[in-house]
Length: 126
Image (cartoon, rainbow, N blue to C red; front, side):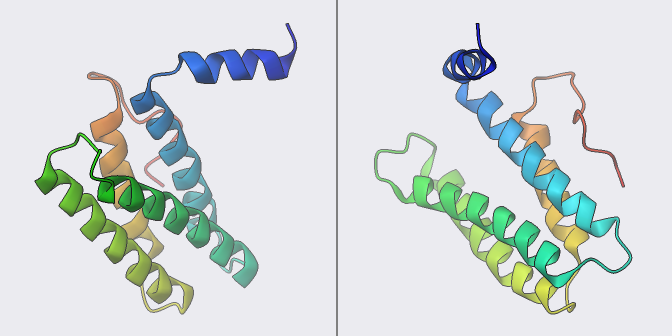
């Protein structure tokens, strides 16, 4: 079986919660890489922030769908967090906010998505 065929089969078998966790891990890793640099390039910074913003925008869009089965209050909270992420990302881009706040929010979400008893694999405390 080729690598692409394996990846396709794995993604089809993956639970939505696992997919969300994996995407959060990838995005959070990108933010951590930037946070670990003393002077990240503006392009790299904006790229990582944009990746995170797009993730949160997708979550907000999904939560605004009337067919979404999450409780209404939770959907509203996710939409509110998405708005905060967008505003805070602008502050981070202008060096007026901390990227660590975005990382901590993502880690908190990842903890909720992770299977019970597991840590946040691959995402160091940094």
